[in-house]
Image (cartoon, rainbow, N blue to C red; front, side, top):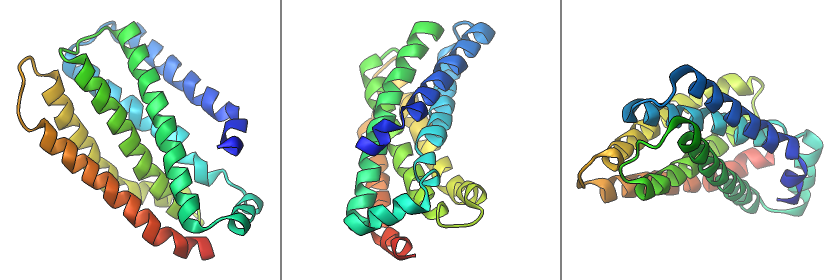
Length: 205
C-alpha cells in the first residue's frame, strides 16, 4: 500500500479523467434520463477500472517484482493487489457517483440501493481486471492479451450489473435483487479463487 500510495500521479490522473469526462458529458447532454444516466455511469466505471486497476501490474518493473518475490509468497502478493485495487475502485465509484449526481442530476428512485450496487460493481470490476493484468503482465503483447481475455469475462459481468441496476432504478420494489447480488458475489469469489490457484505458476516465471 505504501508503494502504491507513493505513486500519487496515477490516482490524480484517474481523478482528472473522471472529472473531465463527466464534465464533457454534462456539457453535451445536460441531465439525461435514467436509462442513459445508468449506461453512462457503468461505461465510465469500466474505463476508470482499466486506467486505475489494470495498470497496477503492467507498470511494475522487473526489479520490483523480483523484490516482491524475495519478501513474500505469491498468495499474499495477489491478495494484497486484489484488496488494494478493490479499495481503490470503491473510492473511485463513490467519487464518480458523486460527480454524476452533481453534474448530471439524480434520476435514482432508490439512491441507497444504487450506491451499494455501484460500490459492489466497482469492486467486482477491479477483481476482474486485477486477475487479467496479473496474467497479461507476463506476456509479450500484454495489452492485446488483456483485451482478448477480458472480453468474455467483463461482458457477462457488465450485463449482470446492468440488470441489477434496472431493478434499483425501478419505481416499485421488484424481486430478484438479492439473487443477482449473490450471483455477482459468487463470480467475485470464483475470481479470487482462480487468482490464488493460477498466480503462483506465473510468479515462478
